[in-house]
Amino acid sequence: MLAMICRSFFRTWFFGLSVLASFGFWNPSYAGSPVGSGNTITADPPVSRPAAKFGGPTKVQLFDNLEFNNFNPQNFAYTPPEFTPPTAPNSPRPWAKVILVCDINVTSGVQYDRTARMTIGNTVVYIGTTSEPTPKLGPSWHIERDLTEYSNLLMSAQPGEINIGNLINGTYTGVIYASAYLLFYPYTQGSGEQAPVVADLVYPLPGTADGSYTLQSNMSTLSLTFSVPRQVESIPTTVARVYLDVFAQSQYQDEFWYSNVSDDLAQQLNQYGGTSFREVEVNIDGQVAGFAPVYPWIYTGGIDPYLWAPIPGVQALNFVPYRVDLSPFAVLLSDGNSHTISLNVYNANNYFLASANLLVYLNYNSSSLTGGVTVTGDYQPALDIQENIHQIKGYPNGTIGTRSTRHLTVQGYIVVSPTEKLVTTVEQDASFSNDQRFVVSATHYEQDILQVTKLTTKSTYQDLNTDPGKKSSTLLSVKDLSYPLTADIVQTFKSDGSGQQKTTVDRGYVVDQQGDWLPEIGLPLQVAPYTSHLSNVVNAVDTQLFNSSFQITGNQGQASSQTYSFDATAPYQHYLHTIKAANSVVTYDHEEGSAP
Image (cartoon, rainbow, N blue to C red):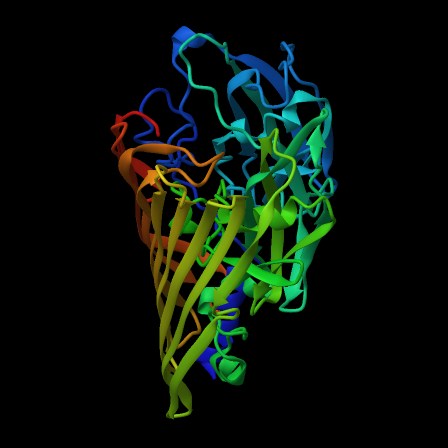
């Protein structure tokens, strides 16, 4: 059963427990162009800055060169910069933009990829993973996040924490260091600059300094009980819009959930169970409110570390949350009573690390609302699993296909007067497919994965007015999201037990939007008809070599690339950045346009 034994090695390598090879090859320092360097690099754009004419930023250091050599989180204190307080709760905040900047590096040596989480006021402001070092290279990288939406949180002093749990011993020697600061760009009324729309209230889930909660199975739930105040500084308020930003990070047996199989086949295929389908379910007061797809992140130690050096996988260093629009529940959440929002991961199989931020936007000078909310469609995803695995000379071969489609409509309405009603409708249409092929013999183990997650969200805002002389209006926005993943993994073994593993991975993050309003922030606001296209694609191939003890002895044929592109109309925007690497060194770097 040589193939089965080596498949165990493959799973062990997945989790970074085998002896890492001495990679070599890289020049960690470069000036100007990264071509010729092996240092970590991504094509992701920086956060765009306001025009210089509106004033330069104020820098607030959060921490500097913190050392992570154990599993103890590091605390820091946040103090806001000096600013002129807003004259009223609904006045513009003092900043046109707030940007989190974080620089991380790992010393050369041997180390796992590690999860990094940062909170301010128990609110997650960054989640990602680290790049793996080698005995000859300590990689460094740069991270930015737009925190403008959290301006109300940042107007007062808050405790902070960053957690990058790390193991240092005789084998694992890479020490992690991190520095971070905030850039506050000023906003001046009357300058012609548009004031940003920011959340009035932020409720973090789970609301702890660590900022995360482990979801072990379907039954594990992350929840928060909260109430929205009926007035702020004596001004009556109601809920205008509300969103939940969800992070669901796969770990342990769920780290490569897209490669998992049905429980009845797990043992003979030497895979983990729970099927290859995962999804985040969101509820309000026990009522289904929406769902979020899970992105198939692969960390820099995943499958084959050579794949991700120097170009890591899509978002591996800086996760992008999925935003669930819960605005149809505005009337329900405006009643001043306590409500419970909760989430769980469908088919979680040990385990997911979950975090979320609930962002609430308020209507001011609005004291009472009547209306309601209705939810129709598929409360649970329906799975269709087709198994075609059969034995050939004592080894399992064949295919497994997993399908799921789901439609959910959440509609909320507000009665403004006997003749006027405001209706917000969020429709989610999801499709998921995962096809796996297994070719197994005494000297060969091959697993091919083709997966596509798609989600179309249609958000409609209607002002329905039957009063004579008044007109009804409808605003529409459509967002199409796609997470394509292809992974081909082929292991071959020689008679002495040594062998090789060739892996090819293609992953994408693609979002297309069009409409005449922007439902993701603030109050309903009509804009010029627009379209936008965002594509972030990483392709990687490598063959790693191992000896009869399953220790990695080297690699060959490494090549990778990343292309990040963004195009939009109204206003016109264009950004394109392409990088390529071969033999773990950057060979091409081209950037054009301005950061979105």
